[in-house]
Image (cartoon, rainbow over all chains, first blue to last red):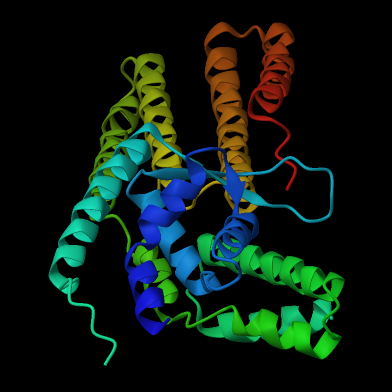
Length: 114
Length: 208
């Protein structure tokens, strides 16, 4: 699982953009959805998540605003911009290409169970 | 337990850059930890377990602080514009001395005094505008940003109000000595008060 978490970390931006494609969301909920999708095997550290938010917001791929809920907990919502959607599609293509290449490189087709 | 989480996060952010954005990020992370803690308790974890898992989910903040540090670098182009405008403002104040000196020579006193008042007015307006654009840290949306906006408006309102009364007094004496209509000229103060009321409405009362 160490390799898996490295691979996931390398795709932090893609994963965050992907999670905002359907609807705006706030930090905790985004991370919780990631945890659910990976059966609790992975979630971002707060530090990783907020470093990525800041970077993506500066690049103009996402924007954020305070939610208007009438509860004591005020939440900042993140929303993907049209520029961010373009970036997501580009990153998705990059990932597909990389995945194909890695598969070809590491799958030798040799079945050897000793 | 909320307080224990808050104390922990406060301590982690002790060395964070002192910016509005850093404060907001801290508040967001703390809120996430509280949510996480409550979810874990609902799942049946013990208080200590939940606390431990929550603080372990923070991770290494070094990179985040570096990212947050970036915004405290002042914008150089803005700095240059600020300095240039400051020089122009100073020049206008110096220029205002010329008609002032000429008015002492006794010729066209009214015209020269008006020129002084107008030049000073332009100078004050420029310096107020410039100080409201003083380069500093970038602020983003959110409460801290709104507070800064209100404080800025309040400052402009105070400067404009001060200037309004100054010009009223100057004009009052100039017009009064020229026209000798002392029984009418005092009405200018009523007019100034009315203008101030309108300004207050326009710029907001500036409650901070």
